[in-house]
Image (tube, rainbow, N blue to C red; front, side, top):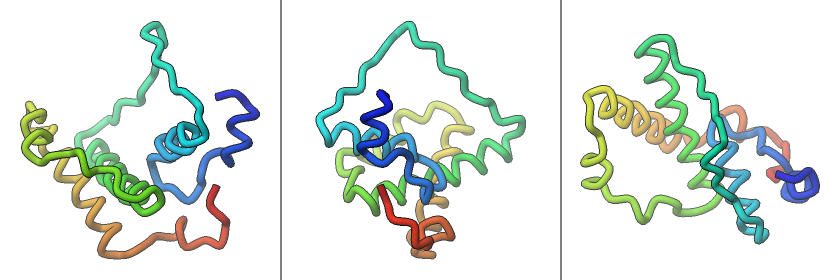
Length: 123
């Protein structure tokens, strides 16, 4: 992002556990900004060293998706369970989806967390 756009939309929302980049993208697009795809871009992702750490990450990703829904409204209306399950081609992928669902439902059940309970205003 250009610095002026980043500042105008309020930067990252520090209340998010994960998905703060998705939140930033949604807010940018709503201002009319375009997100471009560059096939030459190189992206580095940190691989989790164990399956347990991988599932831990999936849990918090699910939790963050619920935070996105709370802030931006329904984001998942176009998802269909059959399609999601059809795209899971390994046992690990199914476990990842299950861990994310548990994270999402944890957010639903608890109604919040430390980060969202802060008095810091949302961007």
